Length: 370
Image (tube, rainbow, N blue to C red; front, side, top):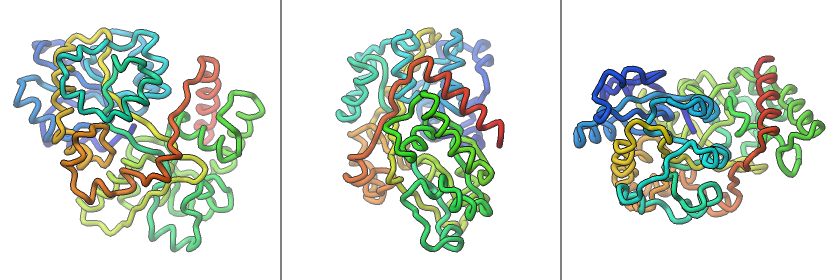
């Protein structure tokens, strides 16, 4: 669900980071794995180890939204072998359309390490758990610069979407920079719930109300983007964002690596706690599904999955990896929310084609006015 900086990935392991995968055609395809995923979703050292063990070269193409990935994959002949995709609503509508290859479970024994509760939740979109292996999960909430927010508003409602969606409050924080994910699937349901609607609806009156609320605070937004906003928070160029829990951890890591002094925190909005599960899936027309299966089995080793959570700050969906995590990670409530928050986690529902068109059109019109 996140886009992170691209530089370290190339420098550390020398894999090919591409917008397309044409380079693979010139290589021995049996020794090439083309991955299409969020940037840095697989740590450089982990990919390097896979390459060393298998002799399979990894090309890594980055997408900035699941909608973009779905559009590209829907055309066919993408040349990708492994994709990370959100469970709902994407996999829910893609599996029936034949997007993905049924997994050969005999070749991925380590997939048995997946969290049983996550696997049960996945049955809502993958009834027999035949197509997807859960990778990471997380939430959407509020990421903020502790000191800048406190300096501007000492009694800021840190656990509420008022921080961004209440005009008078957003106006205060506009001076230090507010960002919002470029993902209607994340943002529109939150705005809908904020307005006390039972669920996001394409009904004209309901959708108009949601968009009116967004347009009201639009003048106070500096960015609508899923790529790189966490880095701007880490560098102090933004002070507040509707963003992903894992990105809050990435921003903290960036501050530590640069020996900066920005203090970053994350809160779960009391109005709604969106929850997502990112999964590893293989396109039905993958040229090298064998390499993809080998990679899935490799990264589902407990210590491998643990290294990813340690590196990017997302909760691993590999239950066998938890003992390999330090207590400071296992007990971090941003990564692993407390039971009271977990009880409020909500997966996106599956939208009809008509609803999807309505929401996409409304979102594009909203963004064009920024």
